[in-house]
Amino acid sequence: MNRQRPFSRYAWCGMAKPFAAALVICLSAILMPSPVISFAGSSPTPSEQWILTQARQAMTAQKYTEVQEMLLHFLSGKRDKTHYLIFFTLGNASALAGRRNEALSYYEEAIARYDADADLWLNRGKVAYDLKQFGKAGDSFHKAYILTAEEKPDLLYQTAVCRIRDGRPEEALSCLERICSTDVKEIRTDWCEALLDVYGKLGKHEDAMTVLRQLLARGGDHPRWLKRMTQLYIEDRVYDKAAAAYELYLNLTEAGREDVLRLGNLYRLGGVPLKAAVQYERILQWDSSFDDYERVVSTYLAAHRSDKAAEVLIRAIEKQSSAHLWHLLGSVEYNREEYRNAYDAFQHCLHLMPENGSAALYLGYCALKLHRWREAKEALTQASRFTGQRDAARRALAQIEERTGEKQRTAQKITRVFH
Image 1: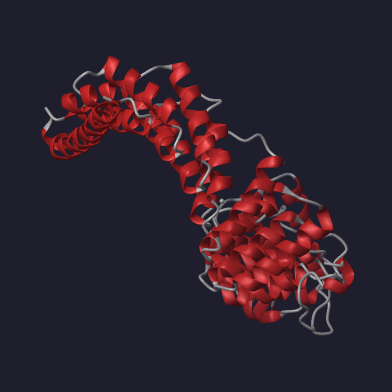
Image 2: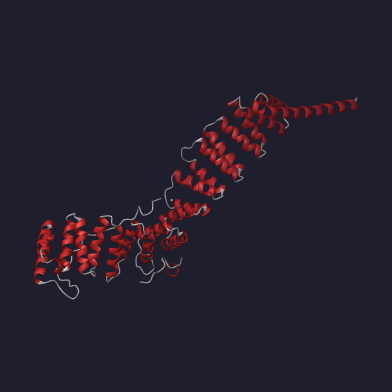
C-alpha cells in the first residue's frame, strides 16, 4: 500500500487534552463465524458442521457457558485435527461470557490453523484491547484491515489508537496519514484529532500546521482547528500568530472573561501592546478590580497611548474613587504635559490621603509648570515633611526662591529707574 501525505493541497486547494486521552476505539459486537467457511482448501467435517450449528443456536440464545462445554467436549481427544472454526466459536463464547483471557487463547489456536480470516483477527483485536494488550490489539486490527476485501479506514484508525496507547506513535503515524489522505471519501474529526496528537508527540509541528491550514481551507474557520493552531503557535513561542488564531477562535465561540484575558496575554507576549490593551479593556465589562484597571492602563502606556490610559482611569474613578487612582491619573496627565489636569488629580489624591508625600510633591511640580508660585510653595513645603520627598521638595523650593528673588530684584531695578 502506497503511503500518501494527508490533505493534498491539489485536492483541497489549501488551547488541552493530554496526548491520546481523547482517543476512543469504537468496538462493535463479537463477529460470529460462518460454519461453512473453508480453510487451507478444506471445509469442516459433517460432525464439525453439526456441532457448529448447535453452538450457533446456543449462542443466539446467549447460552455461552453451554457452548463452551459443548465445544470442549467435542475437542476431547482430537484437538490437533480440529477445524479452526471450532476454536473461533469457542473464543467467541468465552469472550461473551466475560472470560477474555481464555478467549484470546482460543483465538490464537484458531489463527495457528488458519490466519486468513479477517473476522477472527478483528475479534482477537477486540479482546486484546479489552485486556489492555494494545500491541497485540493493534497488530490484530491491522491484519484484519489487510485481509478485508473492501478497505475499511476504521480498522486503520483502531490500529493507530492501539499503537499510540502501546507507546508507539511513530508506527501509528502511517495509519493516520493514510486514512486522512485525499482518496478517503469521508475524513472524520476524530481521525484528524489523532493525527494532530501524533504529530505533536513526535514534534512534527510543521506537518501539524499544514494539516490544520488545510482543514480550515476545507471546512471553514472551524473553532476546533483554530484552537489547535493556537496551541501549536504557543508551543513554538510564536505568540503574535497564536493571538491572531485565538482571536478568530473567540469570534466563533462565546468568549468569557478568562478567554479574553488569555488573548490579551498572548498579544502582550507577542509584542503587540496596543492589541493587548484593547483586550484587557474588554475585561472591564465584567466585575473588575483595581488590578484589572491598572493592567489596562499600564498596557496602554506601553503602547504609547497615554490618552487611552487617562480615559480608562477616569472610568475607574467614576466607578470607585480612590487616592491611588487619582495619583495614577495625575502621573499619566503629568507625563502627557497636561499639567492642569494633573494638578486637579493630585489635589483629589491629597484630599483623600493628606499624608501622601508623592502627591504633594507632584502637586508642587504641576504648580511650578503653571507658574502658580504660591500654590507650588505650599505643596512643596508639605512634601518636604516626608522623608522620601524631602530632598526633591527642598530643591524645588530653592528654585522658587531663586525665581521669585530674581523677579523681586528686577522689579526693584525698574522702580529705581523710573524714580
